Structure formats: C-alpha cells, structure tokens
Image 1 (cartoon, each protein chain N blue to C red):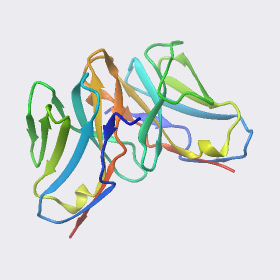
Image 2: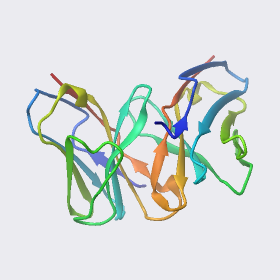
Image 3: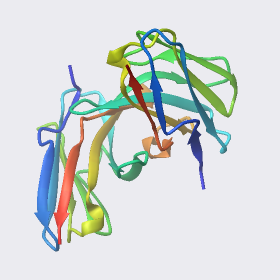
Image 4: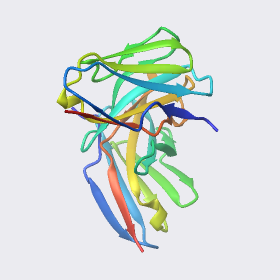
Length: 113
Length: 114
C-alpha cells in the first residue's frame, strides 16, 4: 500500500503559467517531506524540502506547501519554464527512520512553449 | 560535486542468469541504496547499507541480494534473473541523518530480462 501518493500521472502547463503538483500521504509519522526532479536518462535530483513544523518553504520559483491536517502537500512552480519538464517525485521521511526516503509514483510535467 | 556511477546504462540478460549491478560513489558516504523505478510505482527501495558489510532489506528485497565490501561500492545481485525484474535500477548514496536531500543518485541502469 503506497504511503505517498501522487494521483496525477501527468500534467501539461503553458510556459509562464503556474504548475501545481500534488501529493498525499497516509503515514502521520512522516515529519520531513521532499521533492525530487528527474530528467530522462538521469538520476533524480533534490529540489526542495519542508519540515512538518512549517507550512511553506520557498526557493526561487519553487514553493512547497504542507497541510498536515489534510496530509497533503503541493509544489508550485511559478513561472513554469520548458526546462522544468521532468518527472517530479514527492517523498517523505519518518523521524524514527531518517535514512530511508519513501517516494511517490511521480508526476510527469510538460511545460509547453 | 558528488558523483555516483553505475557500471552499465543498459543491460540485456536472459531468464535465469545471475546479474551484477555495480555502484560506486566518491564522497565517502556511509549510506548507499538500491531502488527500482517502475511506471506508476515510483522508486521502491530494494536494499540499503549504512556501513561496510552492513545491509538492511528495503520494501522489495525478494529475488535480490547485495554486497558492500568497500565503503565506496555497493553491488546489487539478481541471483536468477526473471522477466519481472525488468526495470530501471537506481543507486544512491547519502550521509547519515535527517536530511533526505543528501541522497545523490546515479544515472540508472535499464535492465531488460528476456
């Protein structure tokens, strides 16, 4: 049973608009959340993270929002650029098992010029 | 820059063959991981190691084994390859601790088992 879910396998957005990628989790023991980005033929790379004590973290064009009561987080990319086209994985960690990262299935984002 | 290298980018093997996937990292990381990536399932942890000669099962260890004789090298072994092990295999390394962003991935090995 997947503990980290990304219900949209794919998303298409026009260049310059906002991309919103969603993620839901089931385990209330998760206390650290991450987004990874993966281009074809490359390994995933870390993008942005958020601790469960926060509800927002921003890094340039990327913002992650966390709603603990809903067990939901989202990644906003503003403005979207064609180079953002990639697969985005939502991931989570438990305080008792920090070295392990639990990944979601991924959302493939296409930014159309 | 952290570098994680995997011995092959593409591999084709026959059912029943023993398969070795090698991973090497150059940053003296304690932790190393093997994942497989499948469409709709994301990255699933097969095994990880937090020290030389130490290993722990991940979520899907069946049909796999691992070896870590040196800190920089972590090998994934398919004892008898089967078609359902056709997948993208990703190796990662990290420092121990609470920050998941310290996981650095190799480029992956796409394995096809015929």
